[in-house]
Image (cartoon, rainbow, N blue to C red):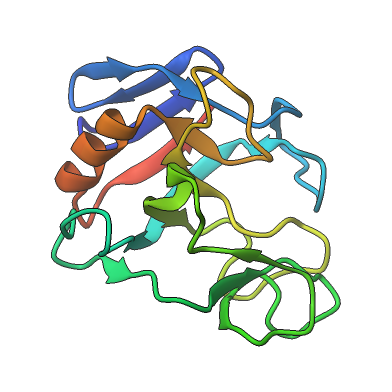
Length: 164
């Protein structure tokens, strides 16, 4: 492990010598992730993207991509676009990326079941803002908004997300 690794467990996250309170999935941690189990997958994951709401904040990193109206994430394991960003209109099961609440103002995407998704192994695992302190997620890792922003600004090419 390096200081640039985000190390996540049920008690919080370490990054660059700091500890951040964080939430994991309502299903706890798992080594056998399945679609809809609400669990956060254990393992070492790469960061493959960052999205942000340009109408709410400035770009947190020069490689972050703006979330536009109509941006969605496919979570339909039957569809060829399963676990990929898609655009509306999209007839299959999906999650809106441009939300009314601030949960997805910054979205850090890890490589769980990506880019070649295996059927029912679970769609995207994001790092995003939490609903309220320590409130469990559907499998993602969530942070206080200002902490997520601090983390997003300091992620480097070699940063990994290590869930244990």
